[in-house]
Length: 525
Image (cartoon, rainbow, N blue to C red):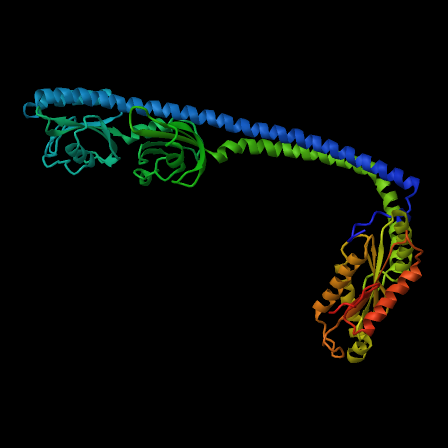
């Protein structure tokens, strides 16, 4: 058998079974606890499923709400702009037909006043000449010095031949100082040259009032923006927000490029509120509407219901637990008493088999384990190895540093030995004085040599100062013996004697090394 293999359990060393009463009490306790846990888990599973269902239902309802809000606001915006589009188209055809040079100002003024009264969203209608001067408006008074050539929409139409209606950024009216959305159209001379601008302005307050009629939460939001992200209207209305850009928001960056409408749960760039948004890009005009409900408002009712049901569930669990405690009280007392008795016996047994200085097993434990492992090795036909170690020049160490320091040294060596023994079946013991023994079941000669060398190297690596040692630090020597009990007559005494003889040989040949049976030369450090 090569190397080291994990030893099989030894039935001879198993702990004797507990009493029949203890087994029955423990079984009853486990069954009772298991039943209680099953009931509690069932309660929790049902409540968790119901809670998850309600959570999904809350968001499903919110998705329906934002979808409906988005459709309503999108339709309202499209209808509003379409009316302005139709009106300005009809006016432009009449004005261009008459020619701006021949325009009948009183008649056109009366027409513009009539249209302003019909359309509630209309703030004003204006016709500007090619130089930006006001030609006619629905207002009663036209300022003589008024000129709109500096407006963005005027400059756009002067340099673009596009005849479609254009929706501009929100500006402040020079006549009333209201916030307005300019909806403008280019006017041409008969030869196609620029003749002026026809402007219709929509009141921002018209949208604000319309959005205010919707019942949404305090942290909800309704937004009308241009396709480039510029905000035209927003609820809640904050004047400083109008004109800001949403181009960097998730909806404009991620969602709109792939779909003209949809739903997204994102954090708003304006106020950092997380909302469930419905968004929709108008098909006819370059506008986008967003309707958002705050995540807080969506889950608030669900959280209240969760708290209420959680309290009921906790109450039920407490009642069940109280009942279970009454049932288990006697069983626990009995089992606790039996456990204390067993632990007391085990503590005494461990104390009798443990070295108090190093925490390793003592010689008595080795004697018991060695006999058991010899019987097991015979039955299984496997090898059994034993390593005996001795701390080099330990008497000099005691003489140099004192017995207290010597005890500390042995304690550290014992800990190192315990760390080097990795398999559960291996056993490290303090054999006596500065001698230690490692029992290696199911381990052949090569495996034992490997373990022995690792232990010696670990002790060297400690670099414990030892002035009486030629190397200046603590080392150890080891003797290694391996037997196959199935092939030869082996006793505990002969195995110990062989390992001790190898240890003696290692010390005779210079210490700080190991020697194993049938090896032609001892190991060098």
